[in-house]
Length: 595
Ligand code: SF4
Image 1: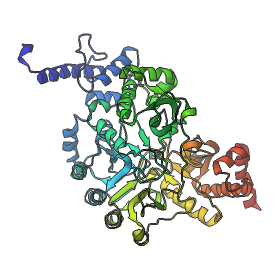
Image 2 (image 1 turned 120 degrees about the vertical axis):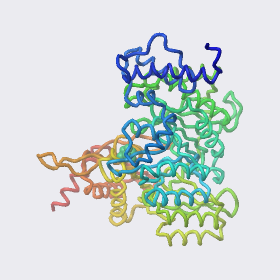
Image 3 (image 1 turned 180 degrees about the vertical axis):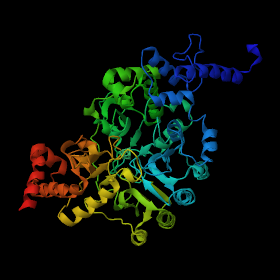
Image 4 (image 1 turned 30 degrees about the vertical axis):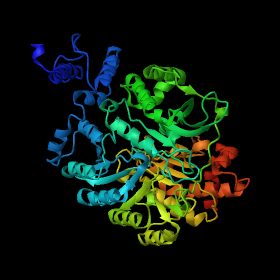
């Protein structure tokens, strides 16, 4: 009888029998508990995940709810149900809110009773017509605005259930997708925003980011990881992409003579960045040829898929496998998957990376191509209206090379603007109420969604960020160096507060014996990125939001007064001053206020 079925039908039947076992395992059928001994060996693209879950249960682990949901119905298999249920206009159940994130739709109640859609934009680069098209979609199906995210991506909010699928269909018309933009998947692939136009860069990251993006999208077995996963490519240019905050960072480096491998441009592999868990990616010593990046990243992921924690969401990131095993064991497992050894190089034979320009994402900068420029436009904590977006797209088409390059600093660059069109771009941007110039504080202001649109937030991060910038610009006019301030609403740390010069993480502040609370923040200082990569140190806990601008003013005034000179960075000053002295600034300020 079995021979009556073709290969596809057999696979379906195997999947069906395994599905029954899965339902039993996840408690979906009476008497369930474990998969029966005779259950068929899982096959197909989900097999490695199912086997990892089975091993977890066999070893006495209890699968996290999200693992059970993935198993009971693979989110991609639920697509037709998404469409049918969306038409009813109802909010999704929690398990479907998780599943629909595989399709890029996040139900964000109670902050907003609607979906937010997060896109995928490899290397953060869009054509002008895509940018304008997203604006049209945000008008037709969303709230008439969008936000640039800290992964050089776009999010559109206020999409009602009935509009979810039409929005996704519209993305496809634009050659875009939101597939795998949320939940336990590899997130938007970032790359150097100035790729291909930066005189300092060693390598153009665009083909690598695009190729990895397509690699993911074409392999369903790379979805449904133990937890989310980030990959970034740094080309060595003047504008940071913060690859050290990613699970995998590929850094273009120049290997010199005498390293035992061919000198030239290689990609250095750094692993385990996750700043919300207070860790920055570490150099593995491995270098690879650019064309090897996909194969190596794929192998790293498959080791994670097999060994990541499926029971505790707080410990399910790759960092925890690295912590438990050490880097050598992890890399040995990767090499086993690849079937070959990876090249390693002594850091002494790697040329130091060129420096960063902390203002490179703002204002006018000469490109490597003669007479052409990129122009960074400042967005108030990443927000643009759809009217602004359409006009910006027009400026890009008429005055630049037609591309819009999003950055991890929640803004974007026009590229390919000839010298004689620069002034026109600046004035047209100003006419939109936006700017190509920013103060030392506004240029490095980063804020996550906050409680206007995210249920996890303890505070209105975007609103408070703008209040801080307004206050500091007025109160510390002498601030003459960039100081990054990052505001994040919860421990998920979407705005990476731990790597800001000053970082704020939302906290409820108790203000009465009855337990009444107001919005506030814990404050850290001294974080950094690139060569100065460092996790900040907490100096103040539970500061009311309305007191934060004053505290930051106190820190900045103290910096200007006590720095050894303009060459001493804010980060270096905080390290030299020490946390105790900085903590005391709050008291000094209170005393001043009392006098
Ligand atoms: Fe929401 Fe927390 Fe991320 Fe902010 S950091 S957007 S509050 S999940």
